[in-house]
Amino acid sequence: MIGSVLTGITAIYCSIKLFMSGPVENINRLLIIDELSAVLVFIIGVVGTSCCLYGVAYLRQDLKNGAITEDRMGLFWGLLQFFVATMYLAVLADNLGVMWVAIEGTTIVSALLVAFQGHKAALEAAWKYIIICTVGIAFAMLGIILTFYAARGVLGSSELSLSWRQLYPVATQLDPSLMKLAFIFILVGYGTKAGLFPLHTWLPDAHSQAPSPVSALLSGVLLNCAIYAIIRFHLLTTMAVGEGFSAKLLIIFGLMSMVGALPFILVQKDIKRLLAYSSVEHVGIIILGVGIGGVLGYTGAVLHLINHALGKSVLFLSAGTLTQNYKSKLIPKMQGIGQLLPITSAIFMAGLFAIGGAPPFGLFFSELNVASQIFQTLGTGLGLVFLMVIAVVFTGLIYFAGKMYFSNLPTRFPRGEQFSVSHLLVLLPICLLLIQGIYMPDVVQQWLGRVVNFMSNGGIPSV
Image (cartoon, rainbow, N blue to C red; front, top):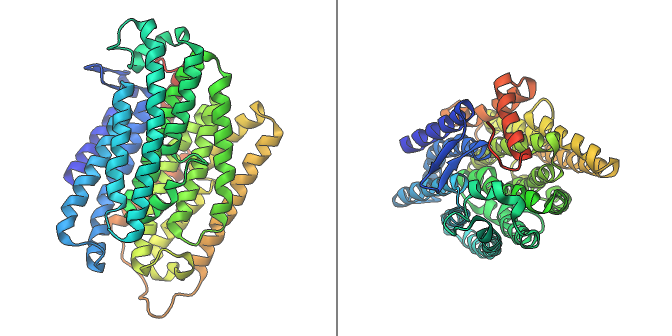
C-alpha cells in the first residue's frame, strides 16, 4: 500500500512538472515523458493509487465472504503492482518495441488477475481475454515491423528507427503506402486491446469477472494505454500520408463502437457488464474525437480520456461494494441500494449521472466539445446520431439506476453504513468531475492547450 501511494505521488508530480518545465529528455533512448504521455501518467497515478488503496478494504471483505484465502492476498498485491508498472512503461516508452512489450505484459498479468478468484466463469473470461488480445497484439507487431522498415531507410540507423522522437521529425519522408498498411494493422491490434467494436468481445467478460479494483484499472486505465498507442501512430501516419486516411478509419471505428454498444447496454442484467459495455461506447467517443481532430475534437478527446477514467473507476469500485453486500452482480437482485448502503449508492448514482454525460459533470463538456467538432466537420446528420446515442445510453443507465435505488430493500438485509476511507477514495474523483464542469482554472486550461497543440503539431513537443 505504501508503495502504491509513493508511486502515485511520483507519477502525478512528474506529469505536473512536465507542464511546468517542459519535456523530460530521453533516458537511454527508451523512456520519455512529453505532453501526451504526461496525461496518461497522471491518469495512472490517480486511478491506480485509488484502486490499490480501495483494494485493501475490498479484499478484506472478500476474505470475510470466503471468496479468497489469506495466503493468496500477497499474490494479488504482487500482480496488481506489476500490472500498474507495465501500464506506466507502456506510456513512458519512447521505443515502439518497448511499448509493444509493455502492452503485451499488461495482457499477461491482467489475465492472471481476471482469473484470480479461480471459478469457472473467471477462468473462461481470462482465457478468452488472453487469446483475443494476444492475436490482436500480433497484428500490432506487424504494424510496428512495417513502420520500422519504412523508417530504416530514412533514418539510416536501425538503433533509432523505433524511437518516437526520431520518427516524428522525419514522418513526411516515410513511405506512404507502408505507413497506410502499418496503421491498419496497428488499429486492428491496439483497437482490440482498447475494446473498439467489433473487436471488443473479450471486454465484457473480463471486466465482469475480475475483482472490482482490477475492473476499475482495466476500464479506467488499460483501455487508455491502448488508445494512447493508437493516437501515437495516428499522429505519425497523418504526417506521413496526409490527414484523411487514418482519420477516416478512426471516425468509422469510433461511430461503430458508440452505436454497437448501445443495444447491449439497454438489455444488460449484470451490473459490471453494463459498465463494461459503457466503456466500449466511451472508447468510441474518444477515438471519434481524435479522428475528427481540430481544437475542439482533440480537446474533447483528451478531456474524455481523463474524465472517463475517473468516472468509470468510481463506478466499478462502488459496484464492487454493492456486489459484495448483495452477493450477486445481477441488477434485479440489487433492490433498495439507497437503504442498504446510502453513502455508496449516492456516490454510485452520481457516478452514473457523470458517466452518462449529465451537466455539470466534466463528461458533459468533453462530449460537447466532440459534438461541436462533429457538427462543424462531419455535418448535421452524424452530429445528431452522436447526440442520439448519448441520450439513449444516458436514459438506459438512469433507468437501471432507478430500479436499484428506488425499489424496496428486502428485510433480510441490514440498513445503513458508516463513512470510511473507501468512500473518500471514490468521492474524490466525483468531486474532480464536478469541479471541472463548474470551473476550470487557467493553469489547467493552459495544460490542456499544450496537449492539444502537441497533437495538432503531429507529436512535436511544445517549446
